[in-house]
Length: 84
View 1 (cartoon, rainbow, N blue to C red):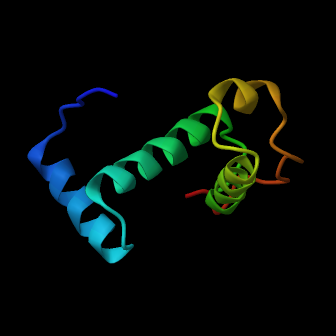
View 2: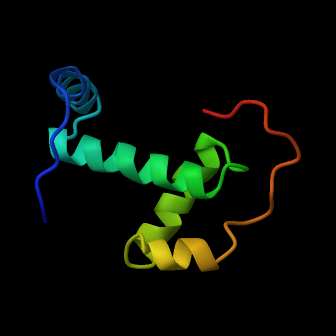
């Protein structure tokens, strides 16, 4: 574990989103980092598919970046519209 410095505005955004979604500030930050990381690694996936990937990873014991890179995330989408 380590310390990550973020701007005051991002901290406030985390606080608001975390409160709205019943997450701690740390849990909200970690969620956004996971979603962002997977979005960069799998730009062909939309938000729904990223969330499904996170649920599958949790059921398998947690998100492992090595597995995410080596294991195909599922069938690619036909188009890139609707990406979050």
